[in-house]
Figure 1 (cartoon, rainbow, N blue to C red):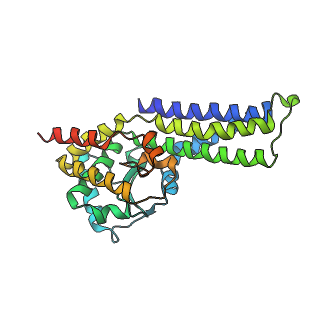
Figure 2 (figure 1 turned 180 degrees about the horizontal axis):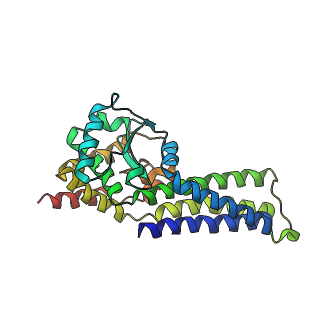
Figure 3 (figure 1 turned 60 degrees about the vertical axis):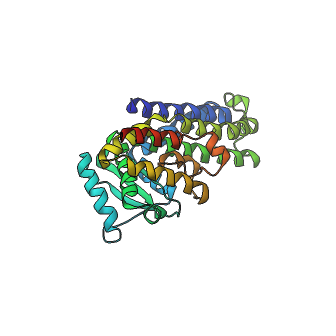
Length: 282
């Protein structure tokens, strides 16, 4: 199912770019943007983890710099039957975390600077187990590619908008239907919406699945349940500078403070997740 979602996301990106190229430059524009889509699909698949790390501003951390973090991840990875992922730290006071990578052998886990400061050990282990569960369930590739494609679509939409304003890329009917300025302005509006739809296409059910698997990896659902409540509260109090296209990667929505972000959130309600976890403890 996750493989199907990856191909679907790549297909949607290709169709959007070809339509945009045709609207701006006619047949030649459609061909150019088709080639661009193929290149983006290739790099999105093989370098999705690097793109996600770059989008979030995360940096690698060594075992000497974070021995406690390495000890917890190594022990939980062994319990989950996973290879040790690469570890990164995201520069933010907001406690949060995400996992990325196309498969368990090429995976990475990133935690924010605030996570280790504001959560106790049991809660941190619960969060880490949740992220390892995403890797174990092999659903991180879908989320990471969605983040990369949504970010790329947004950037292309912005570029087209400025090009249209500056009068660039004017096609004509002889070129095969290029709409020039009008087409560029329409696509500049449509593409950010398309990027948001791609994010919303990521199933919320994967969070419930990662919560359940993570609780089993950690050995108890209590730490993760308590962590989720703290993370949600902190997300409303502590702002986090992150590309909105990557917000669905995190264990809780890092943009929860914005009403629009809540309206179009890819995350299920925290209270529902906590209640499910607490039922596991009974």
